[in-house]
Amino acid sequence: MAESPERKWTTLRKIAPTPESAPVVEPTPAVIDPVDPVAPTIEDPEEPAAILIAHPAASTTRLIRETLESFTEAKVYTTADPLRAFELALQRRYALFFLAMQVGELSGPMLYELISKACASERGPRLLPPGVVFVREKDDPRLPDSLARDVRVKDVLSKPIRIERLLESVRGVLEVKDPTLRG
Image 1 (spheres, one colour):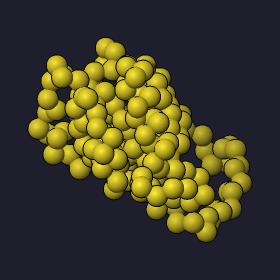
Image 2 (tube, rainbow, N blue to C red):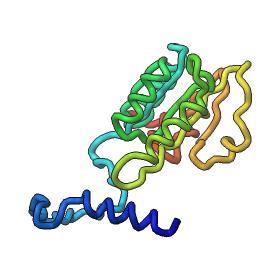
Image 3 (spheres, rainbow, N blue to C red):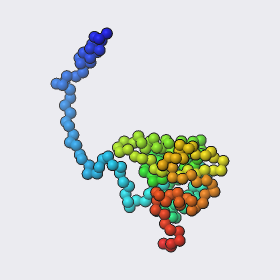
Image 4 (cartoon, helix red, strand yellow):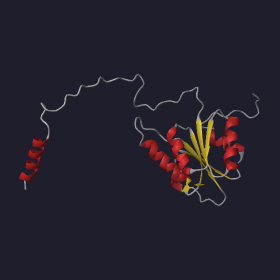
């Protein structure tokens, strides 16, 4: 039995090309990027933060979108389709997600976990998924305890949504304008 691994090794040596017959590959010079390749890339400070809203109710989506556009400098993207939300989440970096607890046939927490897994498996520096705010209907199930304690979950808003509570939930991620000031 001890001879069979040697036989295989000998066979592989015979099959492998010899250094003389192997094609010569010129080494490419290493290009050192002045930016730290391990550090996560920082968004352009001139570009407003992006927010993704995935909710099946157009009225709720509109309320959240218009509130964020009025009181923050964020650029808001919306969809009612969970698959489209997943695609949008992979196309650009978002500062925050607003997800319904139930988006079509997919639950909001499951959609967020899929997005988180996709962010973690991206090439290059490991990216942390952005925070999330879940929007609950009155009859939606409660958020699981493991997810409720997750640091990425910024808040769980129950309908009817109060604008003050909505703005409070994004305050750690976005700069909120004072509604009493004009201009």
